[in-house]
Length: 263
Image (cartoon, one colour):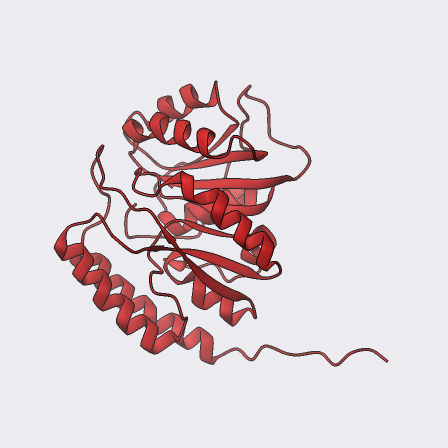
């Protein structure tokens, strides 16, 4: 995904379409898998097949948000929607990963949300275990994936390690890997969080600010085998550090009220 994230107003997003092309309006589901993508056509079909295999025993939907792709991603999504419980939203122009996640969660029908990167590096087989833990923990909980063994370049791993160390020291979010796209949380919790550029990188800190809890779960991480990353390395590090200051400001400018019980 590109660096320039801009939360997308719900009014700017067309009504999501179901597999049969009907506007999606049905009863809540246990789980919605929200996937932001931009120019990931080769990864759509294989990833959808993996998700369906992993979630065979769980009622779910898959919500793809196409963030203004210029390749064959729309066609690949239409093809996948013919055989899977897929709903597709599309930003007319690229607004960034955070905006795509916001659009997807707002449109989702699931009580629980699982977010997943669209490049195939996250493993959908981890979702059932993370969902089970989230449901067992209950309440305002975020289960964050922790890529214990990352399959990225040395430069990318090193830059992430630096950013994580600075972030953990400044935000105290008790999360070893906020950059992992695989997370599970209640939809209602996410909708209460402030939406802003790059917010997806700081979900643990935002959940803690909201009074929720954050736990980490080790997850599989795989090398990218199709397509090209939408991110650079140094530019992402610079933007992350800049946004870190803004999130730290948010934390210090909000006191969460605790209400006395009614007599």
